[in-house]
Image (cartoon, rainbow, N blue to C red; front, top):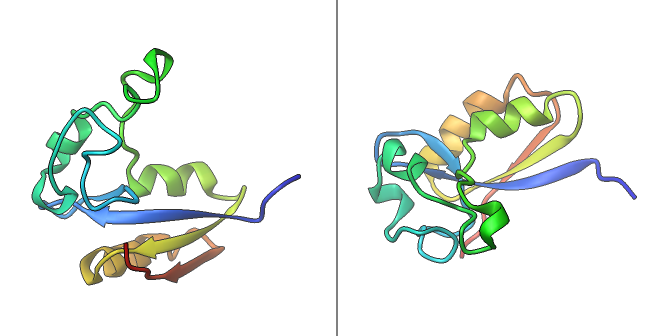
Amino acid sequence: MGADFIEVDVRTTIDGKLVLSHDDTVDRCTNGTGKVSAMTFDQIEALDAGVKMGAEFARTRIPTFDEVLDLARGKIGIYVDGFGALAGRRASDRRAGHGRCGAGHSRD
């Protein structure tokens, strides 16, 4: 079984960096607390996004939108779910060179 597209949820940090997070806070999936939109990229990058899943996932970082674009380019399409105008605008600027991208918006 294969897939043609993956879906990613994009959030914007307070300093304008695009990161992947379904939730608007980092509370559920990391060792931190707070809203993604109120944190700097350096604060997000310092979080452990795997520790709650098990020791083998410890030290997993929250991926950036650019990292996912680079990994997917030429392999699979991306459906971008932007949770805000700022994230949506910057995400659309970046995904333009990817090729197979869709965009949407949903509410938590």
